[in-house]
Length: 536
Image (tube, rainbow, N blue to C red; front, side, top):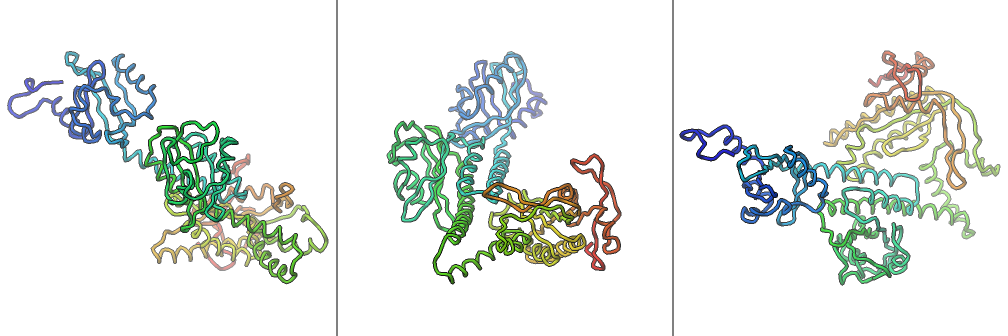
């Protein structure tokens, strides 16, 4: 470095001194001797690390090193510096008060070989950027768990797969062990799905009263309980228990305790704000899904009991009517319309057949981004606001919603013209919904639709205990591909459908698109109107 005696006359600084002043004003700057001991730390370095210059001078740089940083990183730093090369990289540090900060560092040998300061480090504080990245990662994890919650599976299977996802998150410092305790009433938790928990723990903690041990205390206090070691609050001691810490996360839905998620951490692990914030959000989401799954299982159990019951006939008939309405809501119309005849004829399966059908796929655009910025209840309410209109017009046009797939649905039509008519009505209804949302200051939602018709196979698919009366074939795949290729708020149909309907519809100019799984491109066009009613 250049000393003051080397400066130009008067107040004019040398170029190098000017650069040094800029670095000191905007970056964390430090210098070390040949052994890595700090010889200089500027004001910004001290402000962010929360150490005074006196506390830093003479200390190695690992005074601010976070224990999460791999030792291999710093070996690479020293190898580069000793070879006369600079080193750049991202470093996680820990301030004097224990808070975490991230820096993008440039470390290089001092070009002034006669100076006792052998190495210079210039760092940029990127803590906020790392927090923003962490928020995205957290939202992605919650999104996957939310989508898992919409899948058709038992509560036990859902909880088990949730543990798989949680344990796989690289930014959660967890031991690969944990599980769920669910509230069973009377102030008692009962152990449910677990991961890598020994028989001794399953026996000792089969039931835990509110206020007892860590899970019971988290349930009673209704707040996350963290421990970095086994202390007196850890009442239960299963045989073979090793030193460890815990996150115990209460699962609360509308002020009702659903259960507790218990996770293991290493002995001595320090509580991280990011972990706590994520686990609190996770607890809220899990509670919502568990309630839904429990309701589904209760409904399933009610149906089983109904078939086995020989009690009051009038009560049975009343329950059957309720169940019929539920079945109509949750199964394709083709199935529940055929069910009475199947029962009369003692037929257990609907017939397999080859048939020509129309297929309409509809998918929400930008669902991932929307889900990251809205609560689970807002997401479900928004989807249902649009899908309620879609179901009405699909059925009004003699169609059937084959299935819902998260933010999308798939409808089937016996008549090609009916499907085109339904697509137009659904799109118009969606526009009216968006008009109302906009007037209320709410975000507009865009959808894409693809429509194609062709010959497919329809039949029973599944196992002995779970089946669907489903359709399969190239025509289904083409309709799905058309939806993927469609522009927002439009309906893309195959030219084959356009040629079949001819003067019954109005379309845009045809063009060709490539379709996955097809050697040749297919001709398509945008549907604008059915008969005289224009939609775009």
